[in-house]
Length: 579
Image (tube, rainbow, N blue to C red; front, side):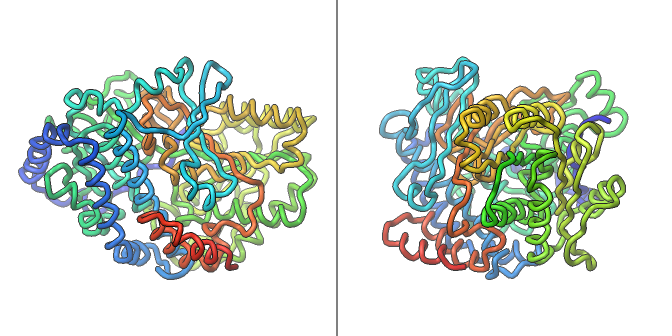
């Protein structure tokens, strides 16, 4: 069985509706005419543009969030609405602020000023600490740190010399990028726009995804500072519009967030002819393509003797990873990797099911969700289905005991892209052997290279051989983002980290994609980001799905990210302490 990601969703009726090619031509021509003007905008001018974007986004935030919540069936002021507010608006604002600070650094010294320190890592690599970046981070994300590992052979001299390349040679980076937005997370398209404009130095045509193109009016208000001078235009439409734009002579490169099937359709075409072209490596599209394409994200659970509090906390942690956005995330956990002889394996899985039972099941709003889920249930009819299964609502689904030797099992090869999680158990004679086997399993069996998490309690980690094994795992895992006791999604959230597949995929085996977004310090050759956190945080983070006050906390956090101030911290901390 050929490893594969989730099938690309259809774009519905829009694929059969006639579209105005002359208008699309004008859009591309208008943006292209502004590309050289954009290269002449100074870093300080770009910082001012980002400052306005933050203000305009805050002004439209509630309307934007209300629209997204209506589409997904959430109460915009309930816990799910708070989750949507931060993932849809808050992460975009945080990224804009991170890039604004980098623009100010470039204006002052020629490059973004990362906090450090820089450490030497195995394999001839260095890592640069990129979080915390301020006293605010140390308070609001206490105990959490993040670093970006560079590709092998890159030293700190090269890191500094190659930062912000588009600012060292603006004219050499002038171009027009087509961004094909994702349909699941409201911030993805706008965030990709920021990467292209402020990271790569290109002007942008953004094509909204038909699944969430209802957000275009809010994006237009948020990004008015780029649209008004002509550096950005936003269009809607289905796959035919996307195909027309990707092949347009005025488009220099393409960035897509979606599935590997979407990438292959764009690069090689569809049907038998597309398959033939892919097999022969004869692309239809002769342009650079960067992409973020999903993953069967593993969560490796290192066996230990957990307390009852720790079991409950980590069950809530993992449940939150799946519950977020109803499981329609490329960074949702897809397979738990446990030790077959872990004494608490069943207790943890039972606790996880109990947490799912306490969470309302959510509307399966993303196209194709029930069809994808059906394929998993056909392969695993004994799966636990927890919660509401009324029309349009998908119960939480847990598949236990997937055979790790069944390399063709759907759970190890296909991203379900819905509210479904599998578990598999590896045999090992010791904790260290388990960790080493888990690394091999994740690298060589589980599909994709985007993101994964390791959970290990501090007592187990303190054992010298185990601590060394975890360090070795972080070094050897071929994933673009790794979380250690922190959900790997924080690499996406922080923006000073890089977000994308592990480097090295070729077009004929693209897996999780190519290139990185986020990366607000504008590193030239990031390999992976690593986020570390405490095993248990008390009180639990506000973004946990089990927090009934998430809406209140996320609104305060958004206001803080838009305009950081120590005066806002006490109120934010008090809100976060509520349970």
